[in-house]
Image 1 (cartoon, rainbow, N blue to C red):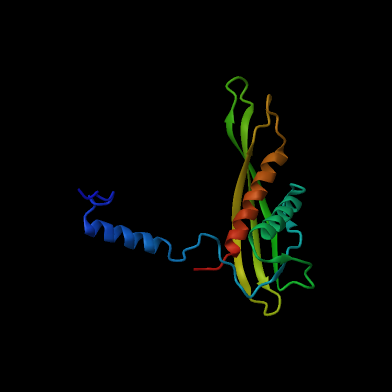
Image 2: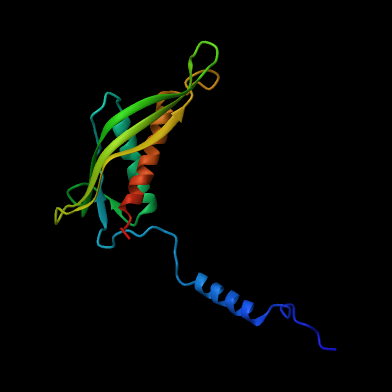
Length: 174
């Protein structure tokens, strides 16, 4: 008696559809971000800071440089040698209480929101490649015991998120 193949129970139409779907699934789709190919270098001067919170501009600029080097094909260089430049300003830093202790009403968890304006410009043509106004990100911290985190924990988290988001915005428009 001939032995049945493991797929003998599958109707031919179902097998054909499964083969088609399997073939189309590998049609060259890639999940990485696409960046403009005519750009090779980018300058990232320290963002301006229009708030009373000192140091946030340095934290954001450092995080942005690291994200560009990590996730893009661009080399970060000084403004005199770069094809493009990202310039921006920290325009607002807000804190909000998310929770408080039942005894005494002391803030338990706080949220820091950083808002920036920035533009990415081609230095040769002066064309604005990307621009955003009022772009925000948040970070959280617990200032009370037993955790007792400083404000800078939330500032750093918000700066990291902003840097990640800005690099995603640099990706090519669809």
